[in-house]
Image 1 (cartoon, rainbow, N blue to C red):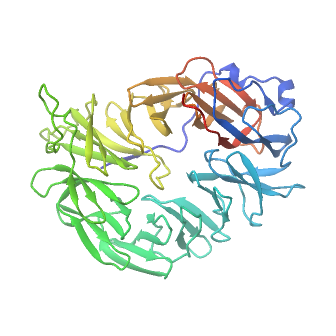
Image 2: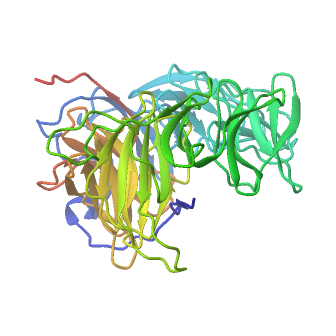
Image 3: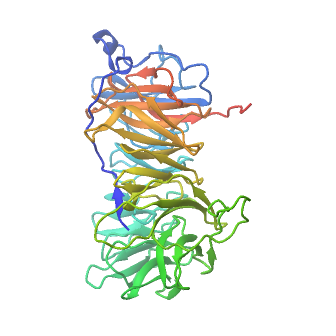
Length: 543
């Protein structure tokens, strides 16, 4: 199975939409400014915190009772601060007080709370683990939704592990620990032969590989400091995930025989399934979607990683022929090439029709299912494209839990099928890259120009009904799309545009825009000369 990872940066070049980017010298002197009111039909936006220019090279913070409030006459809540940018503004982050205003703050749900940060380190960038936890890139400050701050060590660096969990590295001692994803607390650091590939959600157990061939899986208990080599693995790229009882992985014991084994922290090994074909583990480590080949036929099944129970997947009857709707039954055996990916409690499975191996990449018909793992039930996804190869696509930042968007990439046509944690499957045409799930069955995509460069003037939104809508952002060639939020009314996108130039304070190219989700109308610039750094929401009526 091949994995395609999105590159971290793509050059930007496109048409300037003056509604968002034009700014006179007089306007520059008046920054920040509210350019327009929030349209009346936009509902559910609550309090907000904006980072704004105070003087040259100095950024302050404005606290708003509600996003969209006028800025005239407002006094900054902080006159000089450094904010950890990069995460979703609905998730927590921190601001370090600088200059004469040394008050630090936690920013949560559009509010600003006093806090004292450790004396060392910067608050320049952050990544969001989930709605209740963010972590700064520098010094690894952990920030929770209730305002707790953690610091593993003076010289710490945090990273999302390839197979789940968050790792922190003590750069002074070359040791590693884990981060508890519920509390933000750091485990003690332990020595390991290489950088860990996974951590448990509570941060206690880490998995790594030995460096010498044959490579072995090492499981470390950060509470006791003990670690031990266990089973031999085939290379560094193999599916695996921590479960409630240990680390489950796909391995090959003899040539041509693949098996799924569970390795406990004590080094005990229990084989769960063998032989087996394609495997994709759920991020929470409870189940895996597998092709069970024990009978000599490939049966799409769900493997319980705790009990070892194998449950054949049952279809909804749409894959069977006949005038009357068929009763749910096991899916027919798979005979072609299978590729699968998991998000939340759902798997997306694609089978390419079997063809004689001619040594050439020939496009073949495909069929796809969305599988609910907890019930082992499948829904056939219609009208999947022909392909010579299907590969798994992932963001550069691997998932930490169940909230990540996943996708399958079809070659050579470059179409994609996306899978959201709620089981929503959407399709996107060539010239797009999945970006994130917006919720409410919607998925956001980046559009690519014919040159292959990223477009910033428009975004693509797809949904499970097959709908595809291009939404104008108002961005010009000297701007980038920093983040996009689906408003609580489900009908609008709140888009933050930032300057391509690295700045210590917001400028005239830093704007916050509201656009209609259905792509109609022009985007409305609400604020110019501001960064949206924290946002709260309020309940909306569905009537």
